[in-house]
Image (cartoon, rainbow, N blue to C red):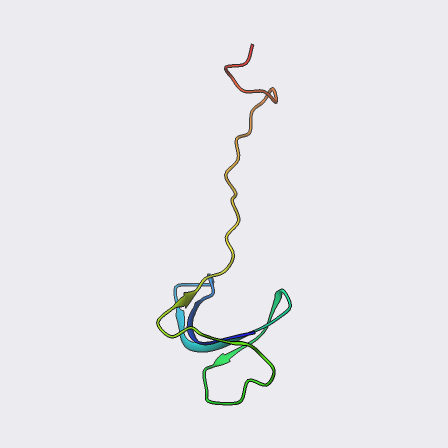
Length: 74
């Protein structure tokens, strides 16, 4: 699959990559390049015009307690 002409936020700094093609092979990003009219081969094409692609976010919300149980448990 290729997401065409999408803006990409990499999460590294505050720069937004504008107008890129993002090629996805299976579950991984295979290639990112400035958007062009080049042939996309056998890739399914999704138009990303006006959209922004973000990295995956992980829920890092945790509660660490000394006893292993909640403070209200008796």
